[in-house]
Length: 219
Image (cartoon, rainbow, N blue to C red; front, side):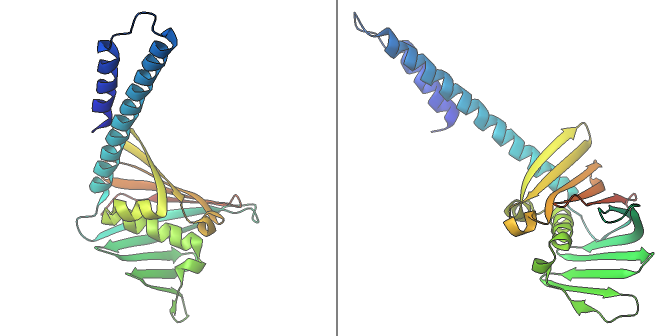
């Protein structure tokens, strides 16, 4: 039985029941209280269902229909440095799970992800295999971008607690890592955009460092 039907049944039963002569007023008060609590629970359930549908619809809109390439500017604010560190690069994604995160300047580097295979290379050096379980910052960035562009809400929820805020066509997603080891490094990931495209990404590190990525318009 659904929560709303349960609430209606309890309330109807309370209204239709006859109280014996000398019956307890306290019992009637408890019945009315339980009826109210049941109605609140049903309303909360409907709100949760609506929120889930809203989130699923948003993730579906963010799913890349094909290959995507976005230029970006990344600004890192680190506790050890007085001035922010800025770099520019390009992000490319090809369904279902290929991602390239490439820094073009000032120090070129390239991160490639294909399924479970991850490689990283710097200019003038050989590519090396990377274990993302040992790099929570990189893992958070890779998973958030890849799961969103794949439209994989189930995978996103397995790794993060996901909340969505919308204002017209503008939206903002907050991702809190479920993994305790990752939370000790990355406390929160946020993405914001409008329509079908993400425009901004924030990586909030547990030590107070912040990485902010501004994406150019889709090509």
